[in-house]
Length: 233
Image (cartoon, rainbow, N blue to C red; front, side, top):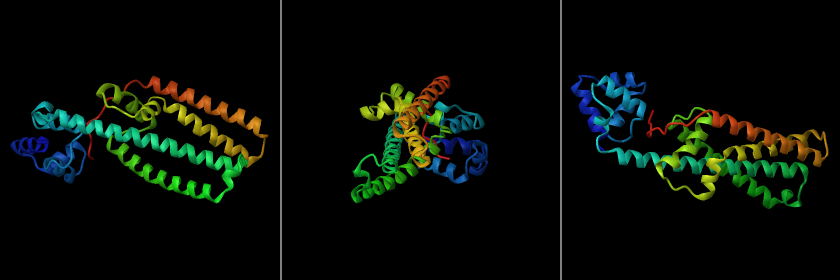
């Protein structure tokens, strides 16, 4: 990877210091230093800013490293999809576990073994959640709709091979979100003891379906999202 070398050469030719370039790109001087030492890659926005300020083009800065940059971007997309899927499944498991215990749906939910399993899954969920949060910050995905469009669009454009279950959830995340909401509503009703279980099931399923349909509609209205190069800010 020679992107950093070319960035440094163009910066020096323009008579610009690292801190000046960092200010133009809205990053720290250390980030620019990492770019120039090929420790990290600049994102596409920073590449465009640098090309404009240094009097060159993005192609000149990137050179022949496009395949490597694409490979890294694909790796990040696959990691994001896997972490997203794990977080959704962990969340759904925890909601089902808590709700099952609240409604006494099965004696299994009251056993010590299930309590240990619940704690283990919850701990794994926290670890995955931290990794997921850090990666979304790197990819500059501001809200959940940016995230869903990214997951939906990237595999089809890059040809990245996602596991079948991961790809299904990435393409239909509104279903998982709706299921999580339905279980959450069921758990809330159990705490209030407002209605019997059959009525609570109808209310919770209706709420989950409404949320899933609304999210799907809003996701569709947002349009496609461009796949960013791996940013490092």
